[in-house]
Length: 614
Image (cartoon, rainbow, N blue to C red; front, side):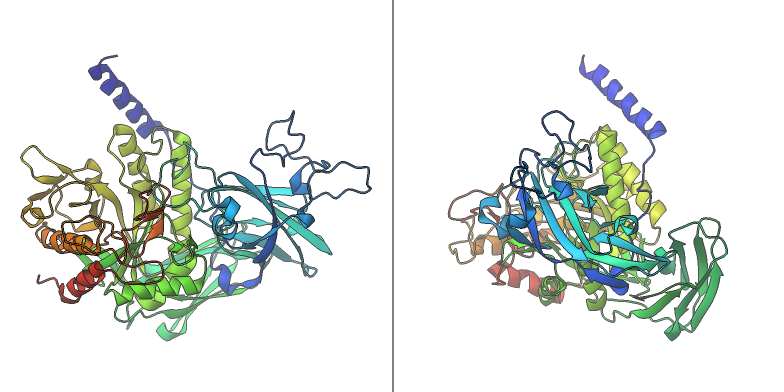
């Protein structure tokens, strides 16, 4: 097949997909606002069994994997115990070691540091007899990457994707005395995964976020949205969605500080959509992150939340927060406790990370390259930090595979559903550094379309790439840019190519008259390694790189923000240089324990003086 035939073939495939392949969303979003409901935590010590050969399934020698047999003594999910000394049972959770949940197995157990595969985890618990008309839901903040969940031997379901929340109704399977919960966590990197096999961060495995039992009435508030209506800063628009079809159920929305007390009725699907006119509203901003006490009531329950109201739009090359131009003075972040070399999972860790960003002079953070813990956006709301929220469509995933698209669409939907009421979140990002092809373009267009349909109140972007044209001009003309609100791109002048000496004089051509955000730039330095600005890996080289890049960036047309790479050093198995990297990406401005490299002060001083007049 010659090149022309190949191009025609790919074009026909892309056209077919565009015309006939729908984007499939999850059947329903995860339960919203878990932390303000009646809950019981299942965090703590869980028994675990390492299972690299998938032995834990029933009759593993003959049956396909994932065959559930509630009578099997071999299946780990049944938590079976031998009834006598003659019976053959080749596992025992109660005699197996324990690990902390939430937590990753890599940092807790030295022999599991690089392990990728299946681990079964078990926790026993008791729960009081449910009142008549009550339900009990089991909620996971995240399990990386594929989770299979069983309660008392009953398979509740499967969730794929390591960074979004999910839940199951466990009411029918709950025992009145003792219960056991078994989770099969599999963190293997797979070709048709999102992300795929190749990433530049550590693949922490396990139940990495909170596990919670949530008690609700039989008909409960599953989902809701309260945000300013698009195009009208004096109207709150939203909806309340019940878990069941329930016509004409009364729903009341109260915002006392705004004098709002309004009642609506659900339609035949259990949904009540509404618009509320408001006067004298104080808008959420980085200087004054105003949050209002909001209450949603039905005749069965009351749910409270603290929600900020603000507008975020673009006009030409400006980003407008509450109608006023704003600069995004940011930094990129991974969800890692770098001091411990572990996945971060607590509110305290979120406060520490965002406080470090604020001390750097930031009003904005890019949460790369996946949805971070819900604590991050909650804390960002209260601290007045704007947020870029991203899904792990990263590098060269399998863009031609419809299953991969459905997976990415589900993760995008789950991220938007969880974070849509957080005023701090201003950007949904659908990808990072994805090389343009017809399949990739179709893939991202579907995600962009989905993001706008699911939430029209925020901006949509992606971290694109730049290239150098024949005349030496650096160009940003990815065709996806025409569909984004913000044209963002990563560039590593002075680290992965290009001259630092010549950087301030480089010419740039941006193909779109839109706000430009430099989503990444930077270079490695090992803290305490000193030399001249000509010596790579030294603090002096990183400092010089920041100085020259900042001069260059200020000459790029339409720049309204940046999020250099990255706040703190983080683990990456791709980074292997002995004595310097040792399994860490050293592009952080801070060490894991907060020590400041010289480039930290360069960026902080720049942010102190950077204004729109610059």
